[in-house]
Amino acid sequence: MEFLQPFYLWIKAFHIISVIFWMAGMYYLPRLYVYHSETETGSALSENYKRMEELLLKRIVNPAMGATWLFGILLILTLPSLLSEGWFHVKLTLVIAMSAYHGVLVKWCRLYGADERPHTSKFLRIANEVPPLLTIFIVIMVIVRPF
Image 1 (spheres, rainbow, N blue to C red):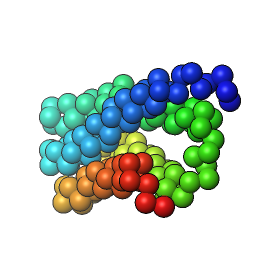
Image 2 (cartoon, rainbow, N blue to C red):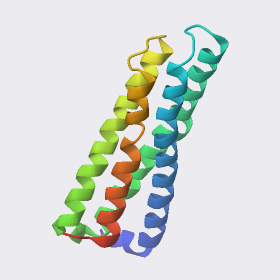
Image 3 (spheres, rainbow, N blue to C red):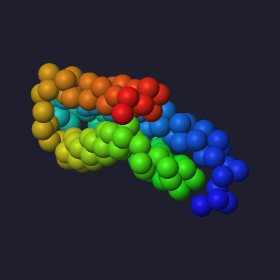
């Protein structure tokens, strides 16, 4: 798609901006679940966490993930040679894993919104490490391109 070529750097910039917003939410949301799991069901604090979790998802995390995918797809259309790179396939697999984890966080938001406590705070503290670990490997794939 040659008509996208002049906009490549703009698309790349907006892709990176979107990733930053998405990851900010992906790092913070599981931490909110940790704190939420330690509150009393029905308490004012629990209700406050419900609102914070829902707003974070709807106003930041979901739109940022959509924008990340949109600009990522535009980058591929602008530079289709990426599809022949081994590092890119690893990166894409990790991004799909991050998106799946995003879906898990959405499910947990629904459960907490219904006053269900699906996991202990200890489990959630461990689960909180998934986005940073995925991010480390994604960035290494993009910058180092080891394959």
